[in-house]
Image (tube, rainbow, N blue to C red; front, side):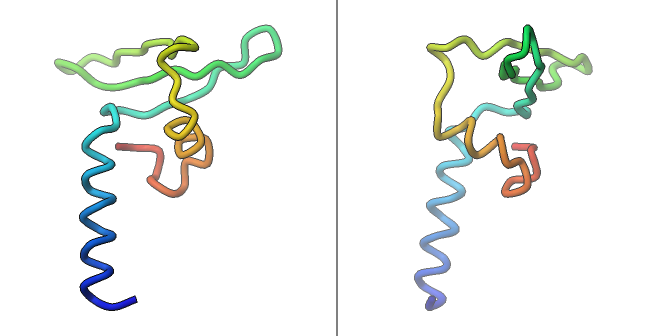
Length: 74
């Protein structure tokens, strides 16, 4: 990979990160099923929101599911 290709790839990743919500996704096991929640800090308080079926992006959740790629924090 050339330096130009690396720079372009980094720019693409930075643009993608800007579109993701702030915070991290974690899973709670409820009635035997893992349910995704988004957690972030706002005005010094921890906020948590359940990610309903219609708000789930399979691409986003698979990135968070592994967690190590982005360190779980965005």
